[in-house]
Length: 148
Image (cartoon, rainbow, N blue to C red):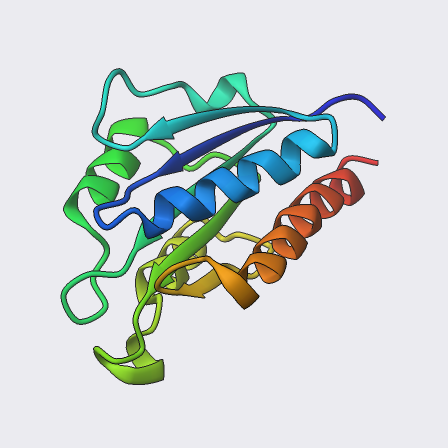
């Protein structure tokens, strides 16, 4: 199987989504893939067409909202790439389960992602590390299955 190229675009204010990104990046690299990361809002926007798949990481903001910089990124791309996978960080203490990682859920729906979004409560440390690793491996397996 050939190496897969992934673009991970993410927005992070507190550092939680950045930490999730780093763990996903390392997991995908451990599977012998190439991975480029892009912090949304910093520097020129990469062209998703140059990659086999794109992962978008976001935090949930203001009662379940997608951050403005993520919305701008989606608009600036100008089209809906295939093979989009979504992950997010959130906090159940603000809005409970209904609003938990709602930005990630909305992005997955918008992109018609065929893989469930990863939802992480605040910091990705401790017991949440393994679900992140498992999700990243699942993304790779899902992509391989679609392109077998």
